[in-house]
Length: 235
Ligand SMILES: [Zn+2]
Image 1 (cartoon, protein in one colour):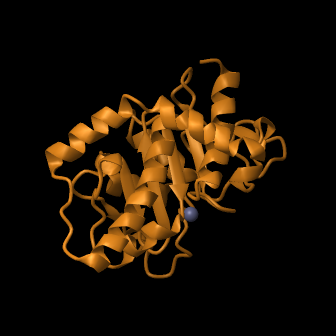
Image 2: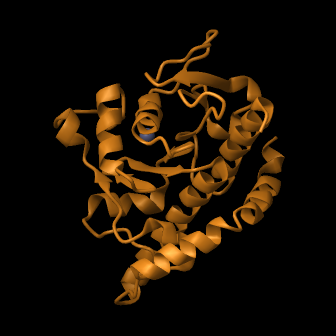
């Protein structure tokens, strides 16, 4: 894909994640530069729905911008850089505060796949406890490389992690995959909360989760096209 194509997809991902209720005025999505894996692309610090190609900045693995030109980066950019450093397989990262997931980061009720669309969640979703790395008085944000590295350690090899009292992080092998995961993790959280009120849940078992995840990955272009169309009115 050309660099312009990659930037256009990143702009689309910002708009889609806003439209689908994953990002609001906050949160962000990044993509690794496929020509130089030591670099990644992320918007300057603005609301995702308003991102254009001109807002996209390039960052190094230290989380610092290479071409700032007066543009202000997001405070939590080391969340992205430290995950890219720890996970060579990761091509895209979404960080959000999407609301339905928050209860699962603070109650001890584990987030688990309740339907085939969220099979990627697998059997256990890790939860990042910022007090372990940052002490009892942080502002909850991933403000530096140390906190970013601690979050990446909690994520381990998983596709998704909750951040206690803050939000979540989704990773994927492409922008399409990470957008899919961020959207369906939120949907799963909503459904799981509803189902917990009704009674005992039968979750997908490990084999069902893995097989459903593989099947959905093979048709990932279909929802991407729809989401892009729906987000078009943003620009
Ligand atoms: Zn955040």
